[in-house]
Length: 182
Image (cartoon, rainbow, N blue to C red; front, top):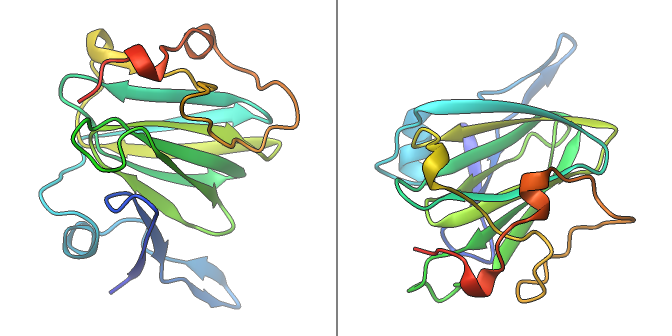
């Protein structure tokens, strides 16, 4: 096995740590292996798209989800550091409305599996961060939704030192109490 899977406070969201090989030449690891993913993380998913985002310090992106053809997301950071957050939007889930967060960085090589039925977003802690996000469904703009990142009903701890930099889309996200959910 080339990965170690760590469970989070929400059972279906998993933190993945690769087996890292380090020697005088540098460092290497398998950033993705379909067989390991299916055996140790989640079965029945195939990734169809990967998005590469570059953002600067204090940028907050999200919380995004797709109401039709929901996306599973495998998130990793290849440069810098972020706090990544996943909010459970599955109405019948015992963790509905709760969130998990993880610090992902190029240094720790961790990845976060966020299954379909969650909103996902990140806040950049480093000067610059590059985030890769594999998805199990293509993005469908007409079905994209944004959950309010600072919704008091969810009360996410983002580690903010001042107001984050957000896009217009992020600044007008929908409150959890009236959001489309699964």
